[in-house]
Length: 291
Image 1: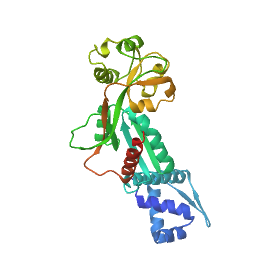
Image 2: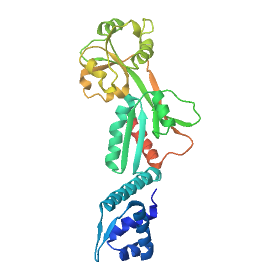
Image 3: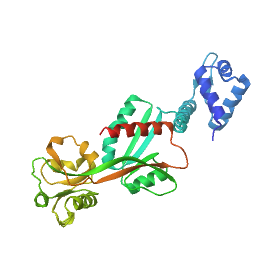
Image 4: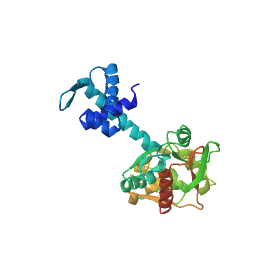
């Protein structure tokens, strides 16, 4: 590995244009500057063509200068990642279920627009993948629907998310027979969500498994598309419905009682959240209440 001080000297020499100004800039002697360049040339071959009033780079010198620029950029990226005290610069990583993710993503983009130094990285994933990603330190923040009891995690309540029975706006839904006639649009969590909600709405009926399935998709943003087209009903968390772009084409069927999930915010307990993560959590908590 090349000595970092030699690299700094080489970069400064090219920037300053001669040995005298480079030595003054780095607060070194000219002999020290010459020695650093000599050490590099012993390792890499001729780097400079020395002329009376200028320095010309050899091909090896140009390659080394590009390498110095890459090292400097990498050093800055590392500094940004470790600068936890900077609340408006650096990366924010959030991994969460798709429904709440659809609601939070525009909020995160608004924060990034207001604070261009922030870098937003969001991923949609089920609970198991969220836990693994936060524990592996691949994402600083995560949201899950089941409260974990892992001592490596700090867990706090984030918000509540009701489940909703959503049908085409063109349909009249007054009871179980109407749901059987319309049919169910399934998704990865559809059977579990449907069982929980329909058992509360229609406790005397035979359950979600007795209803005909009219379709399936695993893309959270597309689940309501067949519902809007009149192809079936589904059960989804409210934030997925609020993110749908054609609300006039669907309807929420109210039931006798509210069925909702608690969403839990998780992060590693062994070290504190970065200041920018605390800022983002505070903003998201405030804005999600308005929905």
